[in-house]
Length: 295
Image (cartoon, rainbow, N blue to C red; front, side, top):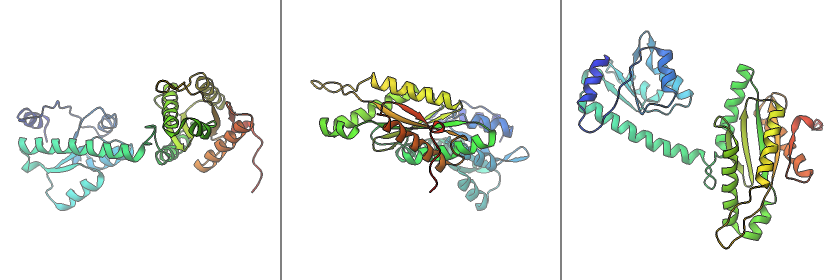
């Protein structure tokens, strides 16, 4: 559809108000869509000489969650099904679109987008800390492994253990233990970059995927986390005293310590065990350890 036609339809909406930005180029449209800066996308089935559904597939593969409504002059069921399978929120035939129909489609697409976002949050977040959960961490780790391998980049995996967490639970109770976990989560988020991923790996273990940098950089960051943690006790409701705690951290880097996700996790786990064996409240680098014994 032409820009002016869609713009006039938007102007005639009864309730909602939208600003329209037009892009007829496949590459630049994909780049804009994957920024997440738009509340919705009206996508033509044919984008110049390219396939609009392929753009939708590429955007979905890039973890774009912006609701997309596909517009086409082909009124066949096959196109409808193909659009839904590609990830479209809705499908409209150009010959049948009216301002009222388009407004309703956008309203429903936005509502569906909010619902799916809530479901994604529940599926990918730890209930206690709000951090990423283990499943999402492993998905991101696999994706980062592919990216790093393709572009010859490095990244680090930090496995973090909350020292003597059982003693905290036994002494202060599980509600206090949950407060400590949330406190540690906030501390880690405050000490990491937006591009890094922070997760609860399970129980009293947390993890960070730190992109780029050298093994020395990752070890320095881990040591800084240990220092900040030991200097930042967790406040408790009055009249409770703040709870002191410390962290032990194992650091493994790709590709030095492992070429696969499994190898990298195993290397970080060995380094974590070494840190705990040294007396806790410290960080160890997997590449500084002797190679593991053959199975």
